[in-house]
Amino acid sequence: MTSLQPDGKHIVMWDLENCSLKQAKETLRKIQKEYCLSDVFIVTDSEGSYRAWCFSKVDFKFFLKILLETEFLDWNFFYWTVTRGKATLRTNSKKNREPQRVVSVLESYPVMFPSSCEKVVYDTGVAKRGFTVLLGG
Image: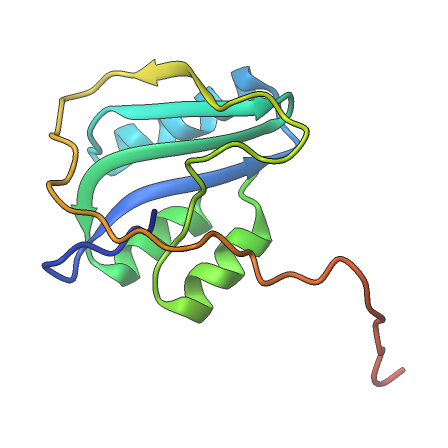
């Protein structure tokens, strides 16, 4: 699913890595309160890896601001969000992992699930092999 909505706004979603559920909840609660966001649903299929959904709609620049202020954000997620102009989170199961499940709901105020969502083939676009070239001193 992507963040982009038919009206050009974005629902807020996160991909958090290398944190505990407690840390994920703390950082998302802080962001939720700071930006008056609706309920946040946190899912996982692997310890230390969390995805979160909030159905508040915001413009793209504001969405990026929210992401930049979120601790434990997966920077590949941010990179591809900027590159594509929309965020993408998988909703299906990943090979050799348990099915995703909701592990926490940070209540604030409810917003209905969008009536239509852009569905895409999930692809991070990140090659798992390659090399690095350092330029300069």
